[in-house]
Length: 253
Image 1: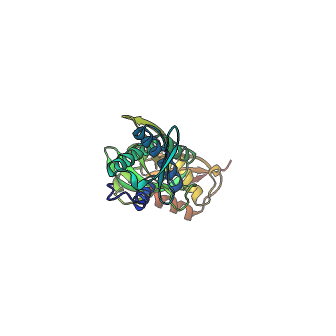
Image 2 (image 1 turned 135 degrees about the vertical axis):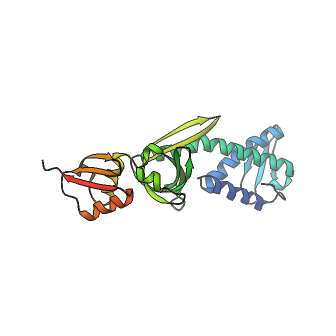
Image 3 (image 1 turned 90 degrees about the vertical axis):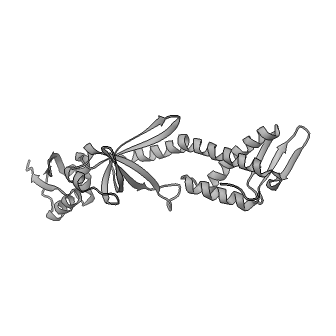
């Protein structure tokens, strides 16, 4: 983003851009911007510098015998561009390490839960799925994530019918963070094949998981053994979701 002029509104535009790029409120963006911009200007002026998002933004140079207060308009455009680039690089680094870790923890807490995902496409034997999680810090802006549903975690019907844009329920099976070429990456594994997924589907329609004794997967059908009889409408809903036959057997023990 190039600054046409060094004016306060330019910085507001940058804040909005960064806020939209990361899962962070404006207050956190401002704090990181102030810290990082201060570090950058300290190296430039060879004195400790504080950058402050006041109205208008300003910076303070701490010299041995005085503190010099300057408006941000005093900075050269080239220097501002360098400062903004430095802030963006630092924010990206922090996001990849610190904030991505926070998201990792959030996803870890959601393992074995159901989410509605939109199929984005396929890469090799894996399907890429977009889904959302609640964001406690900003309830109005859910966390948008992309997970992977490997071929082995899809059903036979899925492999025939999956198309980009289709929405289906998925189980969050696992989550891990890894470093790829000095970049942190979050990997979320989704499943529609696991037995837990079937139990969660029944639970979604009011059948407690403890009611299900066991689940056996067969090609194009699922055998479900339960402690008590299951309403036929629930069986139909589960069958409709997985597009496979669901046979429920009541085990009277």
